Length: 446
Image (cartoon, rainbow, N blue to C red; front, top):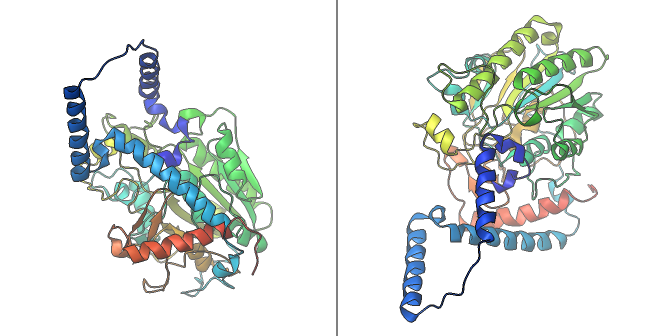
């Protein structure tokens, strides 16, 4: 959770609990404390208790120990400082990640116009199994996937939002949430190919998030402050999809192709829907996904009836898979996640009249988004992407596209199985990450 700590508003659904707990801690901290003399038998008892806690922690993991939780945070901080020192010591390493083109694995669809518009929709925290759920929580997204090129066994490469958005647009990793990436992105490549680029900000009153989006290098970040109806002063999903369609129409009248992206916020952890409810409305997790799907369905109806559908490619995905907290586990009791941060997530490419396909990518991840979209529309340019197009087979000699990394640990999703990398793999990954974190801060040198 520390990786997304900046978005405190995202916890608004449980804000009273957190505030209440904080107040209690502060009250107890001001209580008078007298000196207590410990006798030998007291010391022995405390030592035995700590030894017992250590044993339990070793057997069952540190989720049972507050002390070890604090220790782990301190250890993460120490490791982070050591990593930053190693990054600073790197020379200019951008050459190591340079590619002279985006390798293509398929011919451009003959039904596509030249330079089609591209729209990428990032839905907050959405796992693929939510769409597949037998209760039919998201029927409109499911329908889209059945009419699209849809990638199965596709995983997030990082967690959470502040890493997931920039990481996918630049096909790279983040050391810290707000680290800028000086390398190329899907938006910079499309801009070089004559596209106008926009990102729609669904959190216009969140100044940190707005600054974060502005660092991506889009021509425009659209922030509509008027009458935000969503949780935590955000645009509701209804407002987001209305703003998206309105923006697409305006961009389409400018006489040049456009790339527009949006991150919809209404499905964030802890939120309930104040609008559409799933069945009896008692489960807020199901409510928020159902509400998002409802307004996505309305958007798709407008899109397919408009002239935009003749020249626009829609990409539906997410910033990362759904975080598996207690509310999630209650809503999806049959879903046994190997890790709360990592899981399968949706990626579908839709164009009206497209021939639907289902491609099993066997555990490859969201580093692949940018090269896959560019491969599909037939755009190739110099880049520093860590991922490669998903239209290539699994055996592509890529060292990164099954590796999950945030600021605290690394996992593999290779062959759609979540596991820790081997010691040798971890050493190689750590070495390459140090170089990449240095490269993304440097002036590009081919």
